[in-house]
Length: 200
Image (spheres, helix red, strand yellow):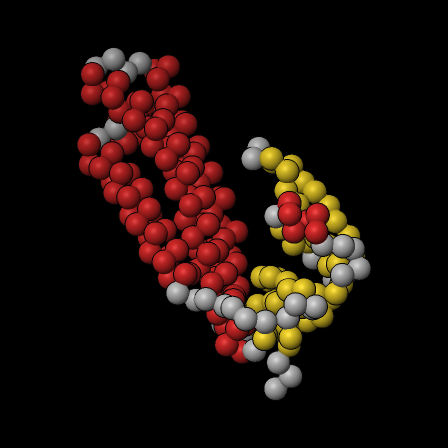
């Protein structure tokens, strides 16, 4: 079975397709980032215009991050594939080199799996209108990954919102904030002493 898969994927057209996908995703990522930048939210009045811009900016940035995540893992898959492809074309491909194909399959699967949460967020928010709630910061927590420490502020409804280290350290427990939701998804929170909610 593995031998059939190896012979099928180690073709020039297959290699060209992988490169085309990587380039296509990269171009899409740049275009989506540009689209996100067209939605500018500024000022300190939280009205419908502000909320729409905030939500749309976050919406397209979610797509951007999802594409970037796929791009990184799929690039790793292509690197594994290239090792096997070069050896195959040189006639030096041996059964032990099938590990390169397995690496390609594994990282392609990982790229898809890690992208799914972003696709879920996009679908969940597609038809939802952003709305505002008033909540308090009730706690803080940290997490660790390979990139380092992640910082979260815990809000009244026990949603943990990932923030920068600076925002984590500067925000005090008990601080009242405006939280912005789109459906059940928390997309941002804003200090109540710096922003005014439009009562219209």
